[in-house]
Image 1 (cartoon, rainbow, N blue to C red):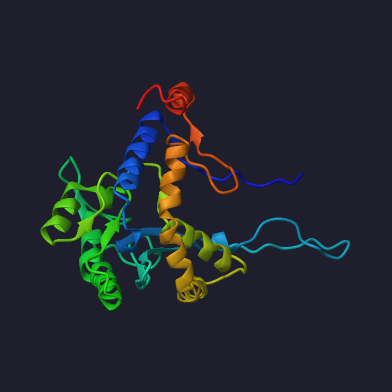
Image 2: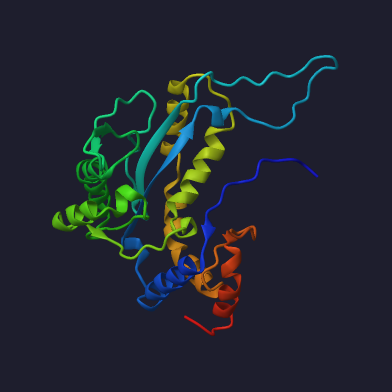
Length: 272
């Protein structure tokens, strides 16, 4: 027996499960060529996250000390991966030390600075950085125009963003089902990087940033190819479980209690 902090997971609903099944069915029937897809997303690396927990060996009479920063600091990074390589890692709003450059107008007519990434910043990041870098990777591989896999984060799914990307001729995979991190292979990349980065403790944000960049640079191309090639299996797994999301170790996302019966009906094929 051991004590550990419970992992945070999204609560999946029957509606989400049906959308996951529908999305997966489309791509299974179309036999989607995942070699033409670039998975894009962001994640955070926190300075306090590099402070390991657990037990330590120490001399009798001495108490181990675990240091933590006085103020939480973090890095917010964006990137895209594909079977043909990865883009650079880009630091966005939400990164400690970056001054807010974007704002929004509230319902009361007040202009407030955005702390996180909004639609305008995401559009600029896509068009100026991520799209050209991904196109360069695809062109070098003779793979044609990439299709971007985006989740439903507000900045990604905003109507203004969808129109902006469509007007620019950027292809985006439609109808992404909410609460589906298991269908986005870049989530695996973030997990790999965090395991590596958090093996040691950092006291300065610059140290953490250097470790993050090193971990990104060290990602093998074979890992990216395998993740994208495994998309067919991910889609089949969603269909087999009728929308339920489970990890390789068998841990499944929490299903809303009122929707358990509906999921059982999906498993029995009594509803679609």
